[in-house]
Image (cartoon, rainbow, N blue to C red; front, top):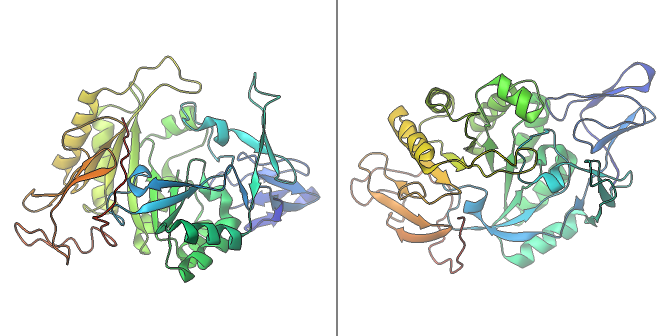
Length: 370
């Protein structure tokens, strides 16, 4: 729904400049920013997706986000809207990320060639109505996911305090393309965890594949979130011939070690062809295994592999003695061997600051990711 936006400046000729994402779009009257969801009405900036959801929500395992070291085994009430601050040629959620809302936010539509007449109805909820649904679901967390949550800024700021009253954790699954001003507000409102997608360490990749200038704002967001106590996990989708070189994977791992810490989980995910890159091949097991080994050699304690079966890549091991603490198959646990006070039963190493929240040892559901 249409709602007055935050974090913008009015400048000459009724133009406005948005400061919610690092594109910092200069928007003329009657037009929208890159995300398609923030529009200039006569010199005032409005979001068109406040409380506009593609569905009332779904229940996912938290590992699907992916978050492996934050409330392991918990369920995440997952919600999404439409729009994105990127234009990724490989987007695997393009049907919502590349959609545009109507001026009242009640409907979505496509501007992509061949889909111009395709429309979708959006569900409108107030923050209070959403929180009631999350409480009823008994989920321990709520995840803003599937499209880019940072462009949902006003909605997140209003929902998060209500979730806190119910002791429900808030999660962002995000491209991390934030501004310092927007990040500060998200930190202050109390976001609990974020999986940040570092797509590449190369500005050239971000310009060519994502349609934005640089990876720098993403890295700054990750550092800022981590510094102020938000649990951060990193995802790197490895695309053959674009960001799969050993040197670039090592550069990412070294950056995480030096800026976020060795205990920051890094998820390397397999790519499958989609959207504007249908002919590109899938990521091989060999490449993902290489990434896993590079991460371990760089000193990362918790590398993970996603979207493909890997004999070690779903498991959590003790950083000191390599004892298997949490074994996973898909999104299900095969083994949990960690003390109640989060120590390794083999060597006594403490994981209190590495694995956040309770481990749900009794989850009965079965999910698969391959």
